[in-house]
Image 1 (tube, helix red, strand yellow):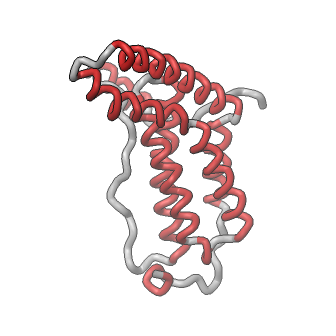
Image 2 (cartoon, helix red, strand yellow):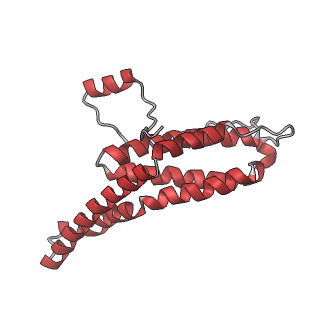
Image 3 (tube, helix red, strand yellow):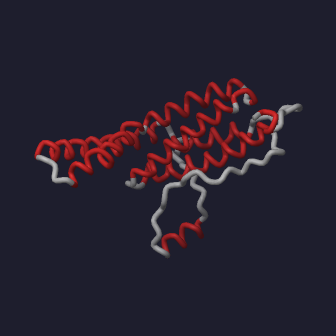
Length: 192
């Protein structure tokens, strides 16, 4: 199979209502934690990882197909949260899972890093200077940074397509589902 598929959770009905109401697609952000004290440590990891996977998936769609820089930002946040989660729960996870996914998630986040850095530079450094009536050299810098940002976005999108982002999302979901629950899994409270 050589199709560049990207999983996308919203139903046709949800997408239809959004279009009917003329509501824009918004970046997915972290939600309230689903954890309960009686969960096993591995069960807690899986709950959190699936929640973050949803954010990663939704924001990957936005980063690939929409122009708002917030999708790239929230995608990187989701990847960073997953990497941190894997490190924190590493003692209850299979070592091959930790090794494989720590590296792959870092690589995915680094692939969009330049685009995000330029978004921040333009929005938080140059925009305030431009609002004050920046000099010709600042305006020229702004034009060059804007051009570099567009190139970085295109490069990030191409890299995401080459790395088959949809396949990576599906593999992570598969590996997450396949994590075996040990016979004597520590409770979340004991693990914490």
